Image: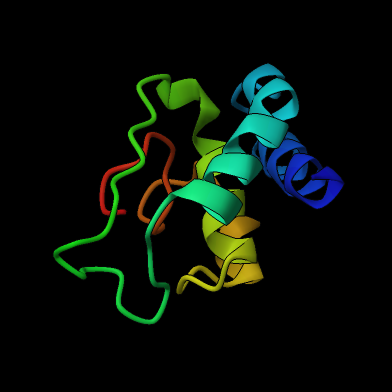
Length: 97
C-alpha cells in the first residue's frame, strides 16, 4: 500500500502537477480490487475476458500508473518518473491502458 502511495505522490511531485489526495486515500481500495477481485493478466493486457478498471476521476491517474507498474504491466519506473510530460506514455489522464 505504501509503495503505491509513494510512487503516485512522487510522480505528482516530480511533475510539479497533479493531485496527490486521491492516490493517498484510494490506495487501499485500489490495491484490494486489483489483488483480490479483478481478473487481469499483465502478460496479456488485451485479454478479451479481463475485468476493466474504470477510473472516472482522471486526477487520480498517478494511482493507476503506480498499480500498473507494481503489478507487472509494461510501465517501467523510468516512465512513471516522467508522469504528466507531453509526448510521454503517461501524460496525465489514462487513455491507452
